[in-house]
Amino acid sequence: MISRKSKFEIARMRKAGEITGRILSRVVLAIKPGITTKELDDLAEAAVQEFGVKPAFKGYQGFPASICISVNNQVVHGIPGPRRLETGDLVGLDFGVVYEGYYGDAAITVGVGEITLKHQKLLKITRESLWQGLAEARAGNRLSAISRAIQNHVEENGFSVVRDFVGHGIGQSMHEEPQVPNFVSPLGRGYDPILKPGMTLAVEPMVNAGNCQVKVDPEDCWTVTTADGSYSAHFEHTVLVTEGDPVILTKVNSSEGETEELVQW
Image 1 (cartoon, helix red, strand yellow):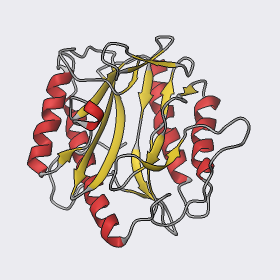
Image 2 (image 1 turned 90 degrees about the horizontal axis):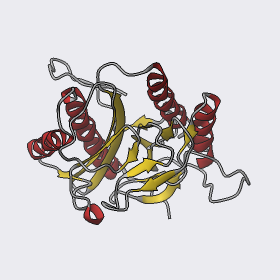
Image 3 (image 1 turned 60 degrees about the vertical axis):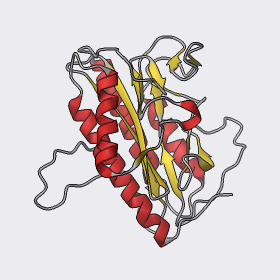
Image 4 (image 1 turned 60 degrees about the horizontal axis):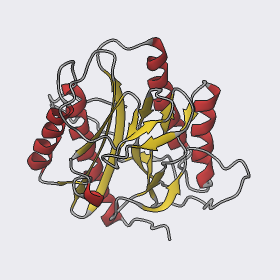
């Protein structure tokens, strides 16, 4: 069953989304050659304490860190550690918080220093596919409108959409109904509900430079990598379906007089 959030719930999800976006922005701005992924996780953990929220991922089904950090051919669920980032790397950051019982969830992939033109295009197309999908999160549309917009943009530009992992509903739980695939079944079948006001979704295209096949690391049982070794990108926002335009809950805008630098995606 897909939940539709009340005004009370939406207010808390707005706050969860704002904090998620602000902390993720801080981590992005700290990325540079030589920094370890563990240092980035420490930064996220410190910010969680500052904002008085809980990290959504830490302890979730045993995940050991506050933020998922996936580098280069790692698609999602990378575990922070001693790895030092190098110029040319692609770094995917997936992060969420819990605020007064409600979740925010967002992701962004960035390059470290100068990256190849191909990888610049990979980031650009993945980000664009996210926004094209978000634009379809409108009351009256079918869920598949989101999936179709993402898949079409990615494949028209020569990349592939990961099929083993998908977006999801979100609210008082990290993962709620419905699943939000980034592709449409070639048979045109499957669960395809009509979107209604009050639904909250985490839309998150995962896009590979090579083919769509992925595998899970057999040692840590978390890190997902591309099967062919190609690089991957991941972008995500939490969105509220309304009677009008979709509302991005994890997109953060600076307030008047604010001096903290913010990253938008």
